[in-house]
Length: 200
Image (cartoon, rainbow, N blue to C red; front, top):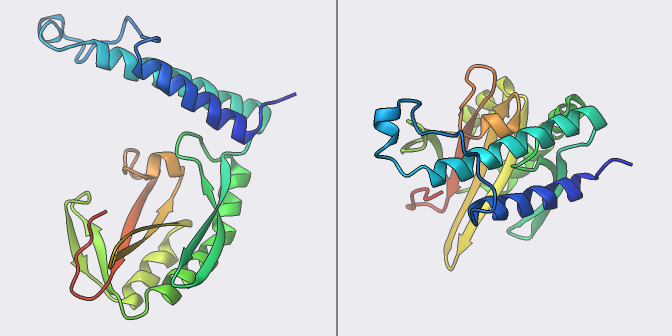
């Protein structure tokens, strides 16, 4: 019997902790591959990171072989409105069926985001998240039309509220940091109360 999505998430969390504690190392891992440069760089961090990346890649293979979904269902409540939506766990991959589930939810997620951001200032993340450009809801819709899926998150503290709409294509795990352009990538749209700037 195959592991469930939730079990794989827990297995990866346990393995990540073991790697961080130094209980798992990939001894062959080096910083640059150049022995002269590598002598001056602490290798234990790289060995821990590589050990976890290898384990995570093995879990992704397991997902494909056993058809284990990477989707978890989230609930977001903003200003008294709630939405339940699918999201691929950040440590797992999306199977082809998962991508279809994400695509089917995109319109509903974007509609919810528009509903709860009325009257807020809207910014598009630019320059790899180092800066923001003010945009309109119409611009957001144009971006959404080109994308395959959407994701949400919010950051709230005291009187500050930021609601982030991620619009992406390809594997969500790869899209988060635009590491695999043009195969996968995403744009981040930030809504904040008037006069505030995004902080996420």
